[in-house]
Length: 405
Image 1 (cartoon, helix red, strand yellow):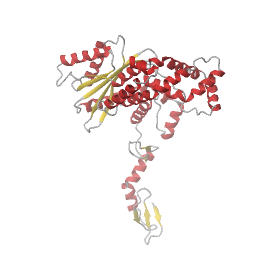
Image 2 (tube, rainbow, N blue to C red; image 1 turned 90 degrees about the vertical axis):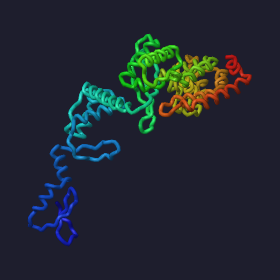
Image 3 (cartoon, rainbow, N blue to C red; image 1 turned 45 degrees about the vertical axis):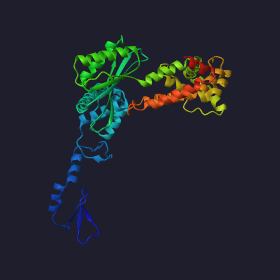
Image 4 (cartoon, rainbow, N blue to C red; image 1 turned 90 degrees about the horizontal axis):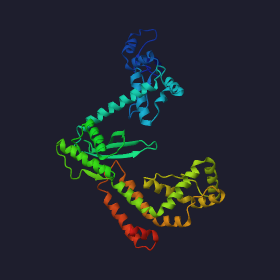
């Protein structure tokens, strides 16, 4: 309590809640002491003081305010586990010296957590979130699936299975159901079995109405096997007519890869150029010096493509085009560089670049996962068809080659 100046009667103000009380110098303090026993703000302060330190309120949507609450090591582990998951931090991070210094600075009661402990905590978070998602599926009427297989740079094969659905609030949702290593051979029956086991684990086999996969023979076999499994299980309401959806984005990828056949020499030259320059810091430094000499802004730099993804090849085209004069100048100063694209290759690319830009836009739009694509692909396909029809009437050799294909 502190005296309040400027009042007609002597008053004291509580330091914690701000309430005012009349008092006399030398008088009794019974009412003041009674208030100390009942004041919630003072009691909260004393609880925090006895625990050594307050903690910060990090609840979503709340401001960062200091609140006097009891330190909870279990809750702290959960928050750290979610942080590790959300930001892809290594488990070993919790053993780092400065992480522990930071945590103890924020709360001296913090106790050291090992990487094995936080790994177990992350698995608990995963299992908890999985159960919540399972419960949410109970209110979902229909689910559409997408699946893809690919091989990593370590020559390991993986399969992902993703669920797309509209929740009870009419919001489109997208959730990864499974991400597994799939041992060869990748036959239709093996792929179908892996998918069906996942659906049974999530208890949603009676809600699936379609699956979208790449346009490949093993996927055709996988979908046939899945249909047979659904029919054999007599899944209520299952209709096989439109169950198999071929990925339009993958079909576009196949079409463009065929169309890029006349540009293979150009693609190879750019690919080897980017590899050669990015492999050595000294070469890259020399390349940037040439850019500066020619007054060309380096920008985002050179991009190396992935041979199976044509849109990454387009990004390589796009990143290399501003450096066309730099490649020529650099070739004169480095005798080991022998992959400079020819003048004819650049001219050929400049002719097809507008059509490739259209295909790149289509690929980007059709690869979206947070909005429906089945209803929007047709106008894009028609636009490209008209572009190609106009190009095929040209007398340029590359267009004539497309026309014969």
